[in-house]
Amino acid sequence: MIFEGFSTENKKLVQTVTTAADTLSKDIFETHAERLSSRGGHFTENELIPVYFTALLGEPADDDRRAQYKNMLYEMRENLIKSPKLLIYIEYELKSPTEDELSAFDGIDISDDQTMLNSLCEMINIEGDEIRTKLAREALPLFVGSLKGEAMLQMARELIVWLDRCTNSDAYRANHAEIPLLMYYGNIAPGVIQFLHFMSRIGFDVLYICGNLSMLTTLKRNNLEGRMQIFELERSVQVAPYPDKPVKAKIATVAYNASRELNNILYSNDTLFRDFQFSDMQSVTLKTTYDEIDILWHQPSKYRTGFAVQETSVTVPNIFAKISGVKDGNLNAYWDSVKWKLSPNTRIIYKSPSYKKYVDSYLDVYKQYCDGGRILTDKLKNSPHNRYGFLSDSLQLLIFNKMQEAADSGFLKLDPSELLPMILYVGTNLDREILKLLQKYDFTKDIPKLIIIDVIEDTFSKVECIQLVLCSLLGFDILIYTPTGYKNIEAFLSEAAFETHVMNEFKYNVHIPKFKIPDSIPEPQSGGLFGKLFKKGR
Image (cartoon, rainbow, N blue to C red; front, side, top):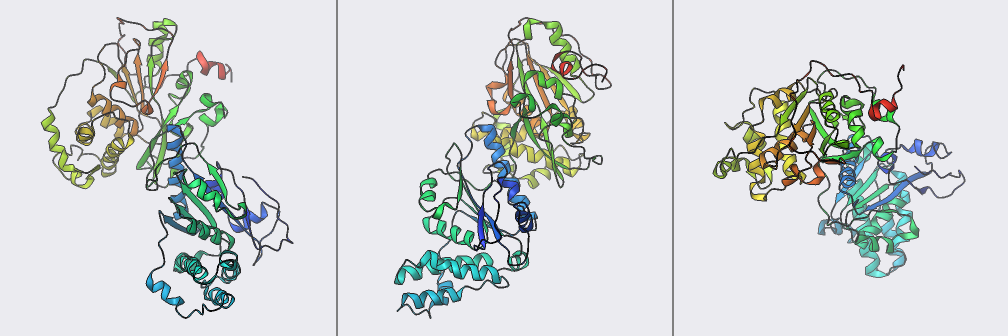
């Protein structure tokens, strides 16, 4: 956050304050008193009103950062809705005044511009908010005073009607004492930009968000006195609906981007949780170095970078990676590494040739549970094709929701006509061992694991790739060991779904040792990056 000092002798009652792009989503929650005290002022009635007036244009170019950005937008609006701060949210367009709204101006004398302007100012009355009523009456001439006749009347009517729409509610009257936030999302016309400036001048936080960078020219051309702080991201996209749910994202860990210390990974949250306190979860795939996988592998989710809780939901940072090749060609160390990663919560799978276990016509059965791109969850739950009736309702719902998320994720390279039916087929026929791991999965604690060893030439099937995506979305750690370096999951999985770590040698005709699942989690390894970071005797 960037602070400016305030002078108590400043005659302007409203001043804009600046923020930083990475702190904006937190800064807007500051109370009026907090904004003043952090800048050397103090709070009294009729005190200076410091407001944020900010625009976020475009989206990050990188897929991982874009997913994180969308999640930030989702969480910001959700938190605003739940907070004491009043949110006035407008999406796509601010409609012109209706005939009924315009009828209130029928008695205005338009024969003299100054008389008309005085009458228009007197029409502004924000019930219960004398300060912003006064500020709005003072600000109106700044926006329409240079216009004449009908042009003045038309613009003034729009500003006054739009102001009334934003403030004529019980919610406003109950919460206007704190600084309200007007959030506008989508493409915008010059006249509406004027309205945003008007609202900023009368003591509102204003935040404009749009993925379309073509709005930048219009925004800059109408940025009166440079009051709007504009953040421009790299990529321009067509405006889509505001994010209404979290999306699967990758998060770079400490060793990957060297931005934090190791303690931030291992001890990022000291909160104690009740057993099975949370019924819902969202996974984020960690972006790690190869060595860092060993550091994180047996860490409970609450100690990982990116772990978060929100009411009944948990964000679980998980691993989904392919190990391609064998480091230095050392197979003994390679298999020791696999053995060390086994735990009671692990299922180990040896890849075998894929055989098609269904016929295309069978997928038609599942089309009745689809409506466009959506899964009809209630209909599926109460159907004979729901094989999970023995599971808790919350776990059933979680699995169904992750099936929808798999369809929406873009991770699966399948024909659109078969995508949902295939996901429904696979999602309703998960292996019983997977269901057992899910049933005992406490989202804040040990993470269930899938380790797949692939030494054959067959690529993964559509079914296998869907299974992996569903398990990843359900929070499983997944490692795919491929000593040959051959393509396997890439056949039907987008690279955005997983990480790939390529070693310096490939091995063929490999004999796989027989592994046994241990009764407990093994002790930390003494070698490698983990051993270097933790000295003996400590």
